[in-house]
Image 1: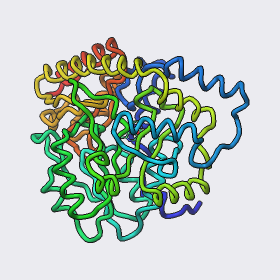
Image 2 (image 1 turned 30 degrees about the horizontal axis):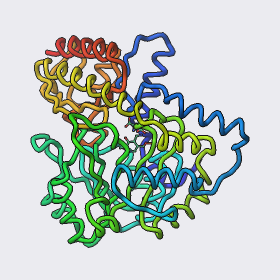
Image 3 (image 1 turned 180 degrees about the horizontal axis):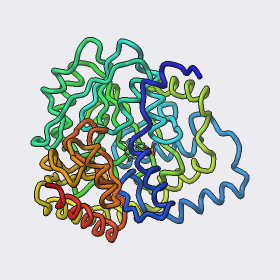
Image 4 (image 1 turned 180 degrees about the vertical axis):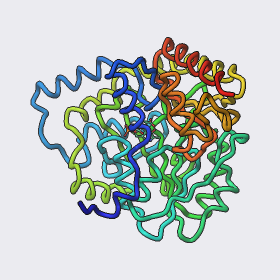
Length: 397
Ligand code: PMP
Ligand code: GLU
């Protein structure tokens, strides 16, 4: 069958593909430990589930306004004021079916052929493909491990051309757990304002930060930044609500109006009862968020220590999100039997075949020397999985 050319521009999401593969292998009875997709293993907090159940019982099961119910927009507005010191009106907020959908909509109303969109690497797997689908070109700015994978202002400036439309900045970042300090963001902001480019600020991991480091989003730094920066966030990660599919954008009215128009011709509104659940997530008690954060920090401490205890593995200490991105390139060139490891894809395959551990090759995030492990899984599985990895790596000669 003939398909539109655009579908060959992209690959299936590698993170979701690994997760699907791990689940399929588990279903055949294989004892797989998955460090694949980044999704909290905690259940959605009870108060949030109860709000959805109430909504369903009350018959809140029909189409809603395309861009989200006023109650949810107000909850988002209150959250942005409370957490980020940002003021928005309802006309500056639009709710979509997950932050991935928010990013997709945004890309499609902003970017087109001839445009360049700046993406620091390592980057989340979906940014580049979302950009390709608009006809624009992702311009990858490779950050250095020795600089904590942080985008440097001079590097940003050097990448900007007359074709540059926007920078996508993910803070805290997937996969390296990079968190920018206020000072570092101010240094990037100076370039952004001087050059007048837009910034898509993907804040989805905002609530998962460690060692008491405070979170800042670019839009909160100045009025000028608020004009240029588009806030993207959602409830998936903070409230263990990945399956509910609620994300949102806060931005200038004309951006929000165009996203809403675009969404009116693709998904219409996000699920009605999930919107009610998101209202409770944002307005209700926040203790569960802090409790999950404390648990993630304990797991980070264990997984980073275990990885660095393996000779040849080098792992930075992430400051946020729930991923580690260790450098395993010391093993490239080594073999076990007839299996030779020369890159991150072969390493991921080897670890899956040899030790029943699923993880994502670093190449999918733009860094082939690395692999990504999600530690949004239990401490027992982290301990067991790391022991398997240690043994499998120990067999390589
Ligand atoms: N941004 C980043 C960096 C992510 O890792 C994810 C992961 N799902 C998303 C956005 C999208 O999240 P969701 O669509 O579940 O809101
Ligand atoms: N964002 C998560 C990850 O990177 C979930 C899967 C996805 O949407 O990519 O694993």
